[in-house]
Structure formats: C-alpha cells, structure tokens
Length: 401
Image: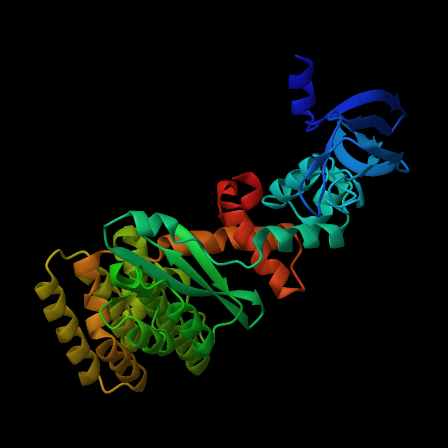
C-alpha cells in the first residue's frame, strides 16, 4: 500500500524521510531507496559511498492550492572500476532539472487545453519553462506514419490554409482516411509544401490516391509534381463558399450603383430553407436586378449538381452551366466560368472519391479556440507546436508512450 501511494504521487524509487507543511507549500524530504548506484562512465554498479551532497530542492506537483517541493538528499559514490566519483541519479528527476518528471508531464497535458498563463497559475511553472518543455515534447513536429504503414486501404489527404495572424498563413496537412493531423507548415509557399510532400516516406506515397484542396493552383502544381498518380478533389464546401462570396460581391456592387439597401442573408440562404414570404421578396429583387438572379441561379445549380449520384450527369450539368454563364456576356460571370472550366475535372472527381475537407476545417475550428483562449500568439513556432499538441493523442508523445 505504501509503495502504491508513492507511485500515485510520482515518487517511485525514493523513500520519504519527513514532510513539512506550510500554508502554501509542502516540503517532502526524500532519499533514494537503492543502496548502490550505476557509474555513468563505465555503467558498472558500485556501493562504495563517498560523501553526501547538498540537499537539492525540486518543484513537484500541486496538492490543491499548495505547491509541493521535493528536498532530495543525494549521495556521491566512487566507482571501483574506473575510480571516478559521481553523483547518483534519482528516478523522479532528470539530470540538471529543477522540476520532477511528473510535473513536466502535467504541464504538457495541461497545455493541450489551457493557455500558458492558465498553466502558470495552476502549476506555478513560468512561460519560458513551459515553452522549453513544449519544444522538447513536440520537436521536431512531423506526423507519424505508423498507422498508414499498417493499413492497406487507399489514403486521402487534405490540404488547407488558416491564418496565424492577419494575412500570415500556415498550412494544415491531414489524413482524411484515418483521420489524423499530419503536420502544420509554417507558411503557404510552394517550396515549403514541395519539401513536405517530397519528404513523405516512399512506402506511403503509392497508397495516397487523392488530395482534397480548395481552388488554389499552387496546391495543384505541388501535388502533380510529387504525387502524379493521385487525383485532386475540390472541396465542395469551398466551391459553394466561393459562390456565396461572388453573389455578395455582386450584391454590394449593385447596392452602391443604385443607392439602395439590398438584404445580404436572403441571397446567401439555400433555396430549400427559404420561407414563402422570403421567396416573394427575393423574386421582387430579381425583377429589379436580373444579374443578381443569374448569380443566385449559378450557386443553386452548383448545389443541385452535388446532390447527383452519377458523375456523367454531374458533368453534363456543369458543362451546361458553364455555357449559360458565358452567354450572359457579364464580365464577372465569364471570369467565374473560366475558373469552373479550369477546375472542372477536379470538381467532378468528387463523385469518384466523395471526400471533403470537413475534418481539416474541424481542426481549424479547434485552433481558433486555442488562439482565442491564449489571446493570440506572437511566436509562430510556439503556436504550431501548441496547435499540434492539442490535436495529437498524448500516447504518440515519447514521455506518455
């Protein structure tokens, strides 16, 4: 029972000499339970005692509101084999550390869901010490491919960007099949993405059969260069989001030209979600501004296309829609039609693979929450490692395995 209690408090390998309690602090005097020590030079075990060391004060876990400290009474031994004098190692504490291993694990586990300031208030560990532990736990951050090596099914991957600060973007790479976060790249440059994709293990590359991306040509070029066998699928949520953005842009232009207030949400609402009175209001706006009706018709046609089952019917609908857009002789619609025509094959690949970047967007939602809790980040490296820590299982980290 006594050994079990010591284990619960992370005090394996030591014996408790005495405990001194104060209002906010608890000092636990401990000494190693072994009577021998292993020489760090020749690895031989010795029991030749040399002298006692000065007591070493080490920060340990908190018990309620009281901070515990270990006062470790270390000894020095002399090796009979190499005649070197050395200080014995104590299991709860790593070499040269002033925090126990249990406290370090508690810091890493708390950082998954809490800000640096909250962890400092909870455990009494400062920001710089937390960052040091974070870099130690997540350095270097490269997603493990062990699960992908074991499975035989094809792998679909997702690539999407999100904002670190303003227009400073970082790239999120995910495995949509498992699903799992694979990496967060420090920028959205083609060279960075090329370097990551080319570094994926050779035994994994043949298994990757598809990538889900938004309509960014840089992603397409990089994927074709490193994965010529993989198909590219345009995330249909991004396509509909782009359609809503174009409708809203046309609405604002029309609103400014005619000095009239045109409701925004009404045009972005899906057709099946419109109430009867909203349909009448929408029809009245369409009669006044026919161009808005065309933009809305294109958006709804794209949504209808994704509800089809057969790829051939979807292709016929998309080709017909692009032709209608060209016939309107509208600059905005023609540019939109050019984009749809350029990405036509990638849009239609959805009907073969049926994948989306929904999991990647879910990761982004969690990362936004992390930034909000921490009131933003100034150091991108720290942000990437903390974001990865929040999205990876603790079992993948060496100290928790």
